[in-house]
Length: 417
Image (cartoon, rainbow, N blue to C red):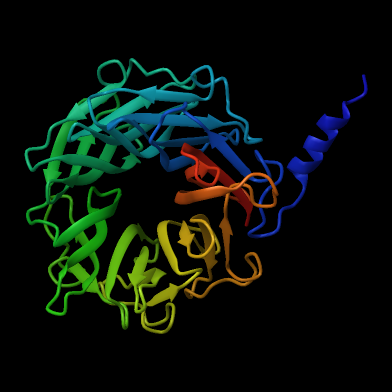
């Protein structure tokens, strides 16, 4: 039987090489895929993603309607179409409490996943089976929530251990917190930091030894400027004595009027990467990456020679997530805004912290819905998370369809690397 022409074209596209920074035309609509959770939503935004061994893209985040927020999960097939083998239509909305938000996801094998976030101010974890239904072997009907006495709590990172147990890291009140759960979701232990975080936490990374790296924005100094604040606490919740001063460091970009960190990544060589932004002068916002040596001092071999790099893709730009390739080049995802609509921004840096010109010819690419289309435009789109799989870069976030419209959806993007 002859193979249909459309199947041959799809196979050809799937196998075609994609240049670094180029949108993968074999994925969704010219490299972009969408998951709309229904009309009337005020917000639909993906916060994290995972790529399965089958090439499926699992995105997790939050949908909100009338002030009520819910846990949301979407799965796309390898070609960017919604996977109807997941929850019947590729989308699942899970209500845990009255105010829910999903922030992070990890794969558990055999198509299963574990998602972490918050529900009514509690640590929350939800386990899904491959078909999108809740996993009854985890917690109570697939759900675990944990009250932390330090205050309102949110899971921001998950780490699955070899024995099947889970470390969930995040923030509780003004303290960093790590909870250890058994393979069935039973709570084993909770550790909160001995001292408050000196500022506001935006991102954390759980380490295999149970220690926790966190970054955010520090307290205001005498000149009214807030710096990037990064702290490291050990498995007992005590400051890592070898990192910075009492386990923390605050960094101010030159001539900046404010700085923030959104994502932190510990590297195999002991260095620590942080991504975020620096403000102004002139009311500009620059995407900023920093690299610290193991002792918390800025790495003089990185960026401009002073440990950080700040790049302006438009009037405003910011990094919200980072991934590091095997060749140690750094991929950042976030957003850029200015005269053009607010857009997803994906950039790549060399190991030395310099924009990599082999990526889209200039080191970055900004992406709006309708790019290349004369009829469809977007008033707003934003990247929140990035993942690497094979020779592709994947990013997820949110999109608002049409200038002046309020239809919103998860967005997924695939590019060559």
